[in-house]
Image 1 (spheres, helix red, strand yellow):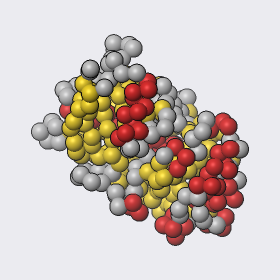
Image 2 (cartoon, helix red, strand yellow):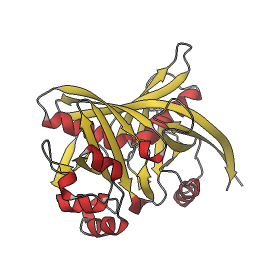
Image 3 (cartoon, one colour):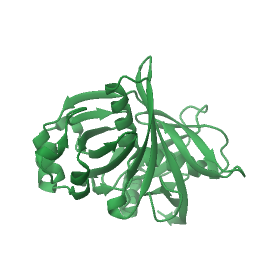
Length: 293
């Protein structure tokens, strides 16, 4: 029976026990889809990644991302964490990871001695927005009142740079007391077949370029996420798209209410094919192990 090695690490932090945990199977050749899904469920983390040879030898690797109940076309902290792990294994320079949503470019951050410390990724798609979401629906899902939703910049909206999220600005007090209502999520998701069974809600409160955020996706097994790179990259792109500026950078804190503080650095800029975003942060290695299937 084959044995597969894995590592775990915390992403969007510079120290252990913060940020968002991730498991990476560094050589998943020979695994079936069912085995990948079972391993992701067993790890019980927001996501687990599986590294495979690239379809195009010009790229670094093909990466599949699974959460507890399904596969993701793209996600931020798995892309950053997998890039970091590959860099620790000797991959030099910028990396290119093949994912369902497209090619993800990864630039590795290194310390003075050249050791990897984290990474920055470019989201695989330009921003698209597809629907405004009723305030009452968002408020019910988040366990807050409709008056807690801030609409000066935008109403709640469905947007994506590779994987869709519902983005809603709320007051700082509402952000602190928000708690997902699973029954409300089920009702809302039932009315949105376009979300393919993944109703993911990012709430944020903004103070200039500093943002506090929380992300809830309880129907996908993530009651609350400590750090959501893809959602915050989408948010950065949305804010630039609604502003008069050509580019902007944001510092985003997430996971504080969970006891897993995370810091995400997100940027967005206007390009000929739309608004493009990046997101980055530090990584802290945790465990190594293997499993025999």
